[in-house]
Image 1: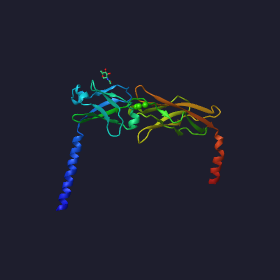
Image 2: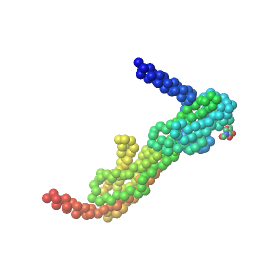
Image 3: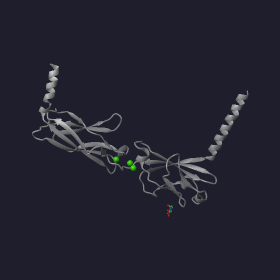
Image 4: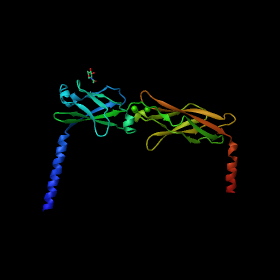
Length: 251
Ligand SMILES: *[C@@H]1O[C@H](CO)[C@@H](O)[C@H](O)[C@H]1NC(C)=O
Ligand SMILES: [Ca+2]
Ligand SMILES: [Ca+2]
Ligand SMILES: [Ca+2]
């Protein structure tokens, strides 16, 4: 009936407007480049004229320019005499994509007469520009000399803003008499480490220990970060009142 034909005309209008919008924003194929973050201003990402098959001489006449795609910033520029896409603003993978394994930066090439858009996808490659870092420079433990061999002490994790091989791959401690390091892989990815008591502590011999803890990434060149583990050895007698208390409650 009438309702149906009205609905049908409305649908046709919407479709028509949709087609009109699409044709106004003709996107003629994407161009994808793989490019490292942190390259200096003016570095060449690729040659867009060659990649879309447009004569370099036509770039100026068609007012070729780079626009940001969506709400991203404009990171690139075009050299109208060569057709090269060049870096115009710092591309920082960490700032753009954080811990995401893949980082895609979208820009757009705009040509006029007739209007034509080419999407430029830049797959931003990580560079090892961050070192592992511990939240605190010193990690403190008070350990009683009565602590038994095999006792474990979990250490703070270090953080590295890079991804993949460029993030933390290993932890180590400097050689010492009392402790070894155990590295534990977390179920959700990442690693933490713990001190394991290998030789029991003796307060008479040593009241304090300082052991350097190192976190290293797997980048080239490799980067590392350190923290110092301070162990204060407490007298075994210090826990006497506590065990007396426990005994007292138990009896
Ligand atoms: C464009 O490229 C030419 C040739 O490499 C160079 O001489 C010129 O300085 C470049 N222009 C810009 C704006 O980068
Ligand atoms: Ca960076
Ligand atoms: Ca990085
Ligand atoms: Ca790193």
